[in-house]
Length: 208
Image 1 (cartoon, one colour):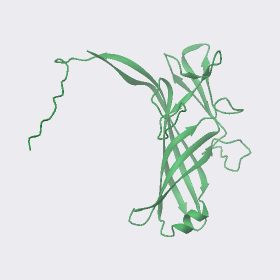
Image 2 (tube, rainbow, N blue to C red; image 1 turned 90 degrees about the vertical axis):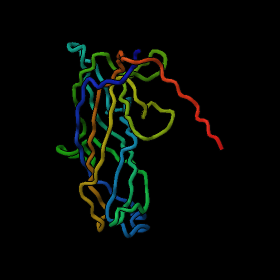
Image 3 (cartoon, rainbow, N blue to C red; image 1 turned 60 degrees about the horizontal axis):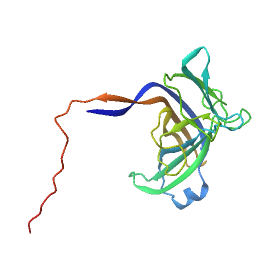
Image 4 (cartoon, rainbow, N blue to C red; image 1 turned 180 degrees about the vertical axis):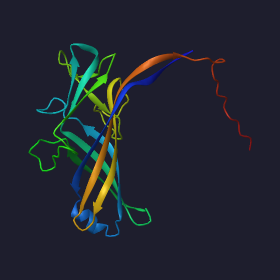
């Protein structure tokens, strides 16, 4: 018996941080807010846009790819919590990470204009596009349902993210949000499994 399972061939972690302004109306409607819990639900890597992220093959290193991250449009789901960790409200919002160097949120140490890494990718990357246009892409494995190419486990370059509120100031209505990105090269590999025959599910009969 054989099965096909996803295998991570290479992985790299990146930590970013920026300040995000909390909508005043959200805090006014929930004055008992003491903490905020964040979840990254989707990332648009701006591939194909000017100065956006890109994936390049390396001529002298056929088993590796170079990934440049820039202009990440990160979507968060935020839960406002009271002092007893009860959920007061939930809101979705978007923030830009790795912005242009002229952006007020750009910081060379915590949120630079771009980051470039090399990943081991022996079976290549995934593409999107039509006809002769094939654009190497990055797939984010998140929590948004829709017809786009994100949020499904696919072969090639994949990404997952975690967010955390590092500092929270209720008076100024600002929070410092740390973002951890995990870039991976994922491929489906076939394995042989020992088994004792097929599994058969018998219907349950209930006698009243």
